[in-house]
Amino acid sequence: MKTIWKFPLMSNLMEQHISTPRGAQPMSCEVQHGTICVWCLCDSETKETERWRIWIIGTGHPLPNNPKLSLLNTLIIGDFVWHVFYESKR
Image (cartoon, helix red, strand yellow):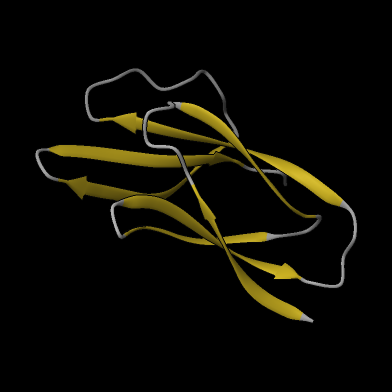
């Protein structure tokens, strides 16, 4: 069954990983109650998992040298602007 799952991120880490059911599709990234979260469309019946690499990068900071980066969203939190990317599996 397809369901939407939330994956909270740690805002103090530039690079981090989330573990999702295999085949998950990232949908959105927003701030909820002060925490940056990623929402993915997942098949809740899939037992296999995969790790997604996520980057939170501030404006003016260098991007990782990775041609498979896809932007999830740009977030403004107080005086800071953050750009959240994931490494595309496809």
